[in-house]
Length: 176
Image 1 (tube, rainbow, N blue to C red):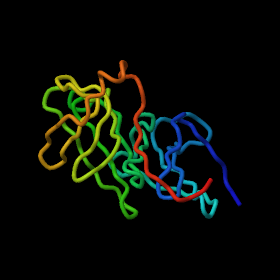
Image 2: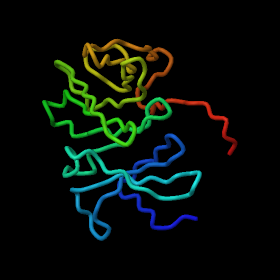
Image 3: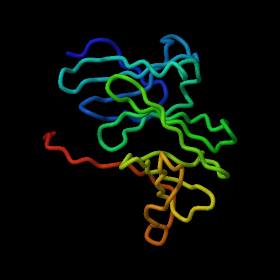
Image 4: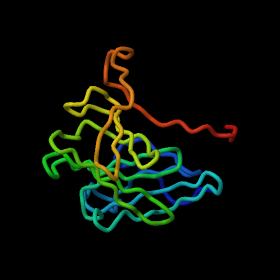
């Protein structure tokens, strides 16, 4: 049985990972206070609501500057969309692992990352979708250890517009 209330203040789609739906919720139920937020969860199996606290480093920031993503089918990530940091050349991704947050940072030496979103993790790299000046691809890998970018797949000849959304796909044996 579902108890408690559902609120979706930021109009972002729900994120599904590991049997849960997740969404960002702000701390103020009565007003549109921009500081202070948490992540609401809904367990599909038990039909119960839960709360995940965001990393302390970002807890006082404007919750509208964050996006929840599911990377690789099972990793819940909180992406900091405050692109004014370091001239829009930095993106912080907080990965939820075993009840705690791990910060990953993507830095580009010269180009803004504000038109880019993470799509997946694989082998120490993050797949990014979007435009990064100086790169010929709309899908690029970023190696977390070396800080280097490499093109993943150049679909520009097959899909005439870069304006589409990319998501990872993980097959499931759960019948709906």
